[in-house]
Length: 248
Image (cartoon, rainbow, N blue to C red; front, side, top):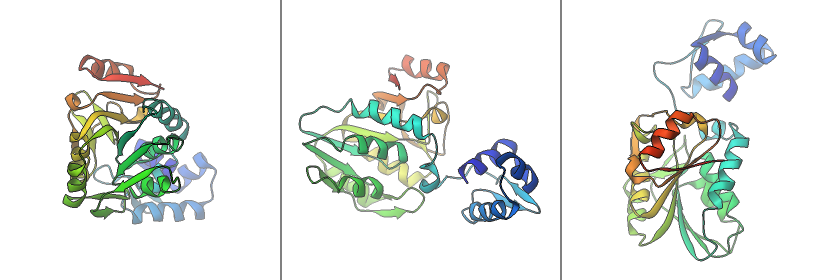
């Protein structure tokens, strides 16, 4: 379904016949998948196919988890290597790339994790040596993150965080770090404001892209960990603004 969504977004519209030829899938399977994507507001069903909606929609986390998996693994390993082996507090925003980083840190023996992500909290709770602090807040089903004033209050109450691992829907020299939802953006900015350093983890498709709501200005970002598909000229612009860029 993620691949179907990419195809329709790239072409603007697509017929069942076009999709069947491209994906070698049956018409019945494609109608089912297009219906599910339409139900989530990710595209618009038409007679015999589908078209994009009026504005880019946020892809649910269940579909995002299937995308760019090799790049996310490389990014996660590079970001995890930045965390010291000694006692450390690390905060995580939600997202599939930040969850991959958290998974790579399961070996840590003295780590406190502060997160508003149900996915990350559940993942890290399996490792009893780790201390997990979960925020309160309102659950966003698209990202499985807790957001709002309760979540912001938890981040503000934490006295010392060494590193914030921040996911993004877009990062650019012009617009900073952005995401789709305004409330989620405010919550994640509260996390950034309490950290000694902030590391953005984003695959190359997010670099040079801007989403609706700003989470952090470039001046608040210490490092970007991305992959070699990222636009090289945009990475140079970010470096010129003082961001340390790691290409995994």
